[in-house]
Length: 426
Image 1 (spheres, rainbow, N blue to C red):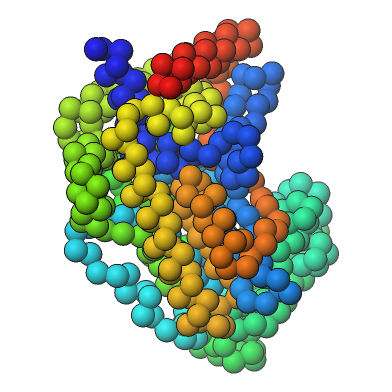
Image 2 (image 1 turned 45 degrees about the vertical axis):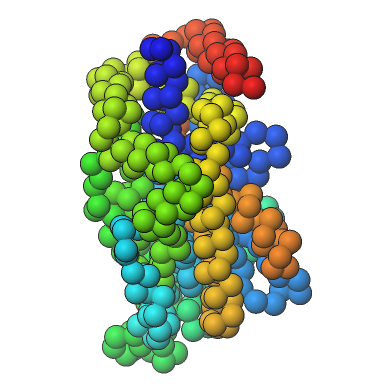
């Protein structure tokens, strides 16, 4: 009984934190998550994908699928923030409060003020790449085309759309040499009027790697199990680390009451109570999860071991969730497949109603992305293009005081335990 409770607790800790639904596709054929080893296996890193999709003939906007986890490193969220803020429209995941109205930004016109905000964010994105380029190569990039290689070969379609400001005019890109002999790049737009000077939306935009003028980060610190997991592991919670309030961001999700109603229709309303209790920290599973995470947070050894275990669990996350019983099926159907349909309807609305939009990013848990990709390529006529990987978190078993041999034994033990559990589940 205790062992069964511990297994179910681990499933809820990962599931409620967004880890299991977000990463259920890791393994053979997955193109949205990967695990990278370094230091002879002492370090394991989880990486998430940003992937571009374009329609045949290059007509219409570029769509990006951006894999998310709700708990990760601060640098992960900062890189995603810069990329997403640079897009014309961002559709993001976020189950709303009961009865919550549709995001008001759906009715916000893409006027010059909104375009000015997007242009500033796009310039910050390019400037951050210019800074990374100079750090790696010891020189400033010579042009935007030179800069485009910073995302790697074949990833031009992730960068090139950002070479234009929100009014469709090419950014000015150049570099100057300071009195100290240092090369400094800068990116400039002449604003809505395309002329020097001006105020408001017509103001000129100048951004350099040495002064990015970053947008404010999120400040919605949570109190539920997701925040507790982040605190225990020395990581960040997505809602606290990212700013979802920019005018080009739009919520594309259901509300809590819709989830409950859909589960009730399937005769699985008990699963909704377990899910929301776990998220809030209420109920037996939530409290037990919070207690265990409190213990993990007090020990560097347990913290790094737990992160390493989480990374290795990803390879079998989908099967681990499936073994929790048939009752979990309706929950997964609602929180995964039905929410995908909401995103697809919203995407089609943008494609139909906003023809001037050139880039659309969808940030969702990576477990949603195979279904979204299938719809993009099968129903909407898009083809996959370039891809960029962003490191979400790293576990360092060296910090846990382990030797390379001990780390390998621990990881082998975890894999054997998972295999046994999966065999029992079948």
